[in-house]
Length: 205
Length: 407
Image (cartoon, rainbow over all chains, first blue to last red; front, top):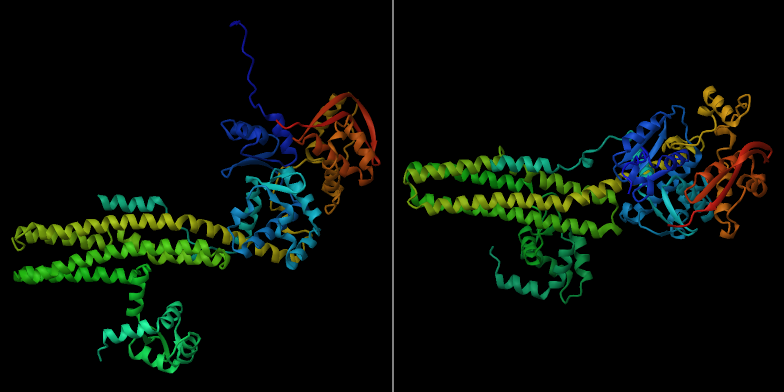
């Protein structure tokens, strides 16, 4: 063992090439991805600073995913994103009609494409047709586009699992509700532990 | 008129099927006509008219306060059945306030008898006070059990009630029962003020020898301690029961309402130019913009070893029609290629050959997506050459694409 040899200089951002490739295609990294640990750890601020020079904002979401957004005031989006939103809204709407736990139903792993409720109801089919989705094959194509963004992972043509980043599409539903709709008294959130703790501490004293 | 227990019990035993049905409809106020129909549906020997008359006469049914001509199970009877069925109902804040007022009144009365030195009356008041503290403790336990039941029901009712309805129900429990409980925990709240006043009064009574035995005061103090502990435990357990369900139902109802709004808007206004197109900003591959900057263009010229920067090709969002599925179609076709087709030794040439008919811009975009797709390994090889694909010319090195083997 030769101790005189200088140590090779560690790569300051080891996953930079892979992350850069992903960022170009709008990819989302989720917990479990090879790049995620590197991106979400102590190097996050370094990555963020690096991409900020390229006018890209790196976001770290506490729900377990990371993505970048182009710093572009003129961004008008794409019709593909509208399709994603409609796909999500219909899914949520259909699950809500059954009364099932929406989060649990959507994030169930290894779901079958043919079991998706999107094409069951006439009202949903009509709205899907407005965004050019008419049959199961169109849904598969859409899922594939979502997979490229890292919102879900496809297993062949028939099965898929949502990834944590899919929460961004559910956030669009949340925004649609919250916009122009202040919280009603019924929506009030519960007191937290600190309130109880405060009461208990005071009581104890 | 007093009602014989034997007569009431015998009637109950003979016609228990009617009571079963009435118990099932306990939340309803029923008119005579509705009651006759209800009784008629139950197999019984007696006529509906006779049974209805007896139900009223034996005071199993009483007229409601709110509506003349409407009848309900007598509250006292309903409470007895609840007791038998071990049905727990949360205790309302009005009842709790009533108990606090009772404790306050008992304190005032105890002060008065202390002044009069009336020990016999004093003992009665202390006995009532102890009972009042015990009832308050029982109330907390009952509320806790009732909330656990409601949460359990709300979890199992997902097939019949929407998330929003269940959320409102759970939320009402919180505001109607748990907030008052939290107020009781307040060290400056009414309960603590009353407890402190009682502790003070009991100490004075012992000091002045009004109470001959310390044990009497200690019993009351113990009840107060039990109540304080029960309050804390009840609140914590109720909150632990409610909070996860509340959070989930709140989230689900917001998602569902938001989704319904999105769909209504898309149906009303159409999808073209929809505001939702920009609702999920992502970083995207940009052909124009940064690449058109002079510095980058000059840099590219040096790298490409050409004398002048190449003319900027005006790629942009409009280059590929927004409603085009070409990109998706090509990617789908590639994904469906048998693994034997890989590696593709010259990706761009292959794309031009197989999918040239789809148009120049989709082809370039697909090329870009594939070389950055983590499912594939792309290797770049010099020299640069010019490719004529789909009616355009691209200067590029040869790119070999192979499928990345699973780790």
